[in-house]
Length: 339
Ligand code: PHE
Image 1 (cartoon, rainbow, N blue to C red):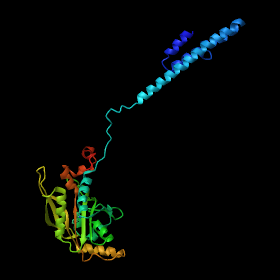
Image 2 (cartoon, protein in one colour; image 1 turned 135 degrees about the horizontal axis):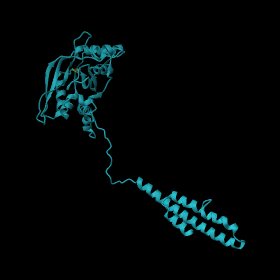
Image 3 (tube, protein in one colour; image 1 turned 180 degrees about the vertical axis):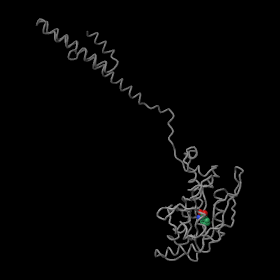
Image 4 (cartoon, helix red, strand yellow; image 1 turned 90 degrees about the horizontal axis):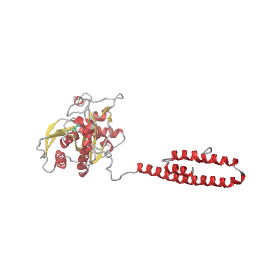
């Protein structure tokens, strides 16, 4: 029986099988246990030797059982560790990396150029009031220019700013001249969308105010921006245009040696010399806040341009709607690149 049991112990493939062997031989009603129960039927002089013999078998089996159990436990542990092991030589799973949106890249290029020229860079509220978006910018309610910029109105009478120009007003009310600032941010227009028009887009607004600021300063600034964007051979062109908050007003375009052989004038934005009515509106607001009137008699210029136009050309994006459709096939091309 001992030989048989030791073979079965050695052959038990796992803990469960080993437990079954243990029960069969040394359990409460196991074969060895039963054998002990027969001692009473033996003549007293044989009992001691027989008892010792059975107990020796029992001890041998228990030792074997314990040893086998330890071996099986270790084997199970090894198998578990092996299944959890990481092969560090395997290629890793790619982690999705972010990247800068093309509009932010263009903004960063532009603001770097203006920071080099000593401009502050600011943002401002996208929800505006009529006074800052129109009235203070010399656009009274009856002015046809209000129709040029179709407006998203809110229930409370406020609006989504149609341009970044209201920040001219806010900045001048809060700061005294001389000042140089660019504003970056989203603007909204209620109009049909197509390849070059979106209901939401971006602007970069520039504002310079001081003494004796002239149209020459404006033109030099735009030319400096063009060279910063497109290199030393870039040129700028000004054409007369009308914006109520500047006088004279102009539209400006940039020309440069496009490496793709697509050199042409790129219409970038509007600009002009700050209209005296704007300075007056700023001083009125300052006065209402108990501040000094400091803008009348000053001179300055402002400009506004759309980074989308620059980005479309720079990155070969044919439709403005691609920027905001969140299609990973488009935006994903800019992953991982931070410049
Ligand atoms: N705010 C004008 C627009 O959105 C652009 C502009 C800004 C024109 C500053 C002149 C001066 O169309």
